[in-house]
Length: 355
Image (cartoon, rainbow, N blue to C red):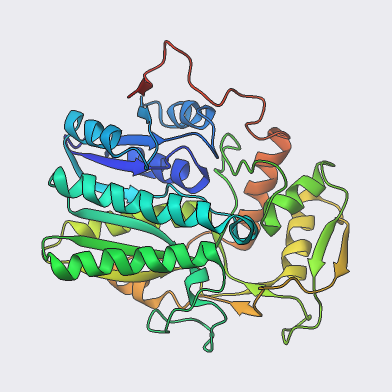
């Protein structure tokens, strides 16, 4: 295992926890910080179970610069993977100031802590929402950004902040990873997405319909210019997505990397109805849905052109849609309440350290 560590902010969350597993399996030394607002320490326990390795964890908020500096002081960190942030599009329209403060101010404080600790490599969890309603499908990274909601704008603004920092100080390296639609779970069924309250995204909501937690899925609109009238999205398996972060870290070891944006997606879009049918097949029965009016802010098609990441990061998606649906059902059927029955905080005797 490398002596130097990778700091993962938001490492107890859905994508963060799966990425930590891939890092540990690649013999990386990992330190997690997470405030556990939208996650559970149980995810860290399950990471340890799956990897048979202990994980260094600190309950730290990215708005607490002093605590972050203490973490940097305690560990020889060479790179940061930054997941921490509020992440619901709908919620961001209701409480925009919370999103701007938490996501943007938190990132600025993280970057300041990194700079003061002489750490200049960052992999940032961005989003395809930065593209707004794209004029070109599949979407290339060269397309101008134009997010249409506060959540997407926080991602877009943070990209600008990191890019400006890399321009001003050429010792910084950054990979801005624009995710499309993460889905699926760890194939063991031990770890998966754990949405708090009503899920905001199609697949976790549909999986809760499958276990009887939700009565019916609402499909927002059937009059889009798509094969069946429903919106098209690029669904990327969370394992493939996690491996994309490992590929970006590997790129950081090259000289003079600078700042670059990468789409992480399959390059293939599926409609909402296609996803319902695919997941119904994994479950073994038809799942109930109804067509309702379009939802404000939804765009017709978000499908990635992942060629840049394929070439420059030597990365590509390997999981099939069938595997993604099967892994999600395996997780949801084994964990009908996700991690809800588990405590949000770590026990006193664990390795957690409150700063």
